[in-house]
Length: 99
Image (tube, rainbow, N blue to C red):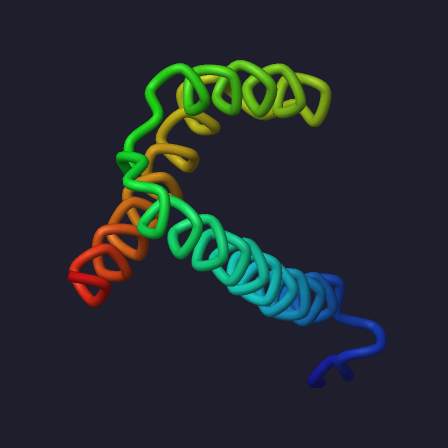
């Protein structure tokens, strides 16, 4: 006897995860579009892509927010480092195009 998706919690939760993953990617895309705007501003004003103090602030805030969601500081730090790496790549690409 096979279970329908309505009565299969594993399948239902996988569908939920797929939906959440799609939203996460959309949010990351939205974030990186804002990064592009920042990159354009920085390129026009000769501001370096890396702003270590700003990233430290972002990291501290996100680690704290992650704790509120039950996420480990290690996970949040790794995630934010990956996001930051992509943001720097985008900003450097914009800077290179402006030269």
